Length: 110
Length: 114
Image (tube, rainbow over all chains, first blue to last red; front, side, top):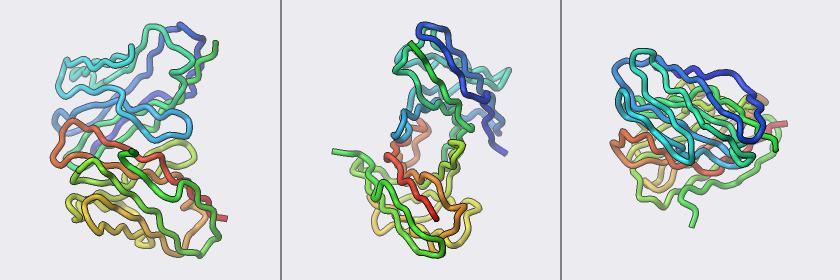
């Protein structure tokens, strides 16, 4: 079946540190892949996406590359800010719905 | 104007009661969803409707009954509430047939069952 596995959190970083959140997936075919972000007390927002192998999604300094050979879609940011503190969800699109990973909580301190 | 709005935002109730959560979207989307987020932040799809027709019904107790009076609304009714129903319920919508995966989420409805 379709599933998404992401690294367990919480991830705690100092401002300007480098961020990586690992995500791997299991799916039939080549689904579109996504990162969603949930800020405290809010719903989820699309952060970035990639729809085919080797595509790189990017937004707000975050990047992720669709790697077919490793079935991965790791999220990276070169220099995190306090305002990046949130829960990050990796997801894949099936024919009918988004399937989410368990979420990784990021906490950035100044 | 809020794109996807849910009411109520907070709901505290006793076990055994029946409650409803309402959702409305003004984006003109054809597909709407209910997701449940547990205390560990895990998000699970519950239902999906496309043009008022049910297209996903995951393994959810039949105490949960979604109703879509029109394609802009998807309400969730829960009978005989149990402690384990305590969670945040998110409504979302997307354009029909989209492969872009962009779902627009409401702010969530936090249900606490005592």
